[in-house]
Length: 139
Image 1: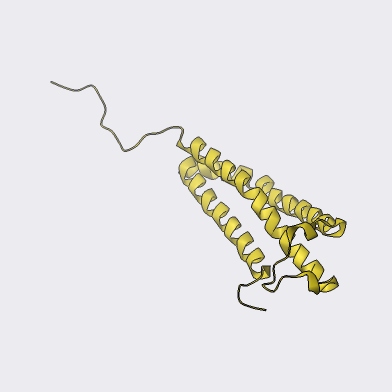
Image 2: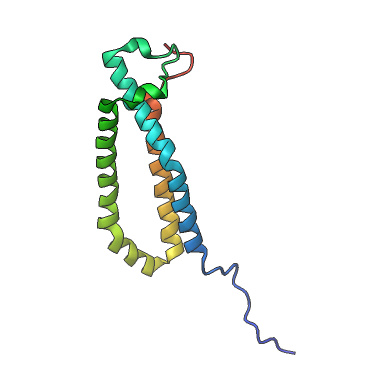
């Protein structure tokens, strides 16, 4: 008795790229607030190191309420504006080449490469802000 079903070639889930994109966007949304806070803390620490180091805690941290000064928030807005601008440049320049590559090698592979880039972006941000963060036990 012959079966009229074709043999399965692994997991075939046509909406996987869309699901991965949704998860990626959701994680970016969840990470936005902590990333802004890390940037704000770094700017705030630099500001008070230059103007009033006595408000820094012994471990190098600073109370968040002190970071709401207009000068600190203006600097944060300025940096965030440039950050968003520079993050948009690769999107505009690489949309067509990435689309052509996706047509050639497949969307899933291009999406996987994109996730690697997203991870590198997050780790770079943490690395940059981490070096300006207070170290426990150091003064």
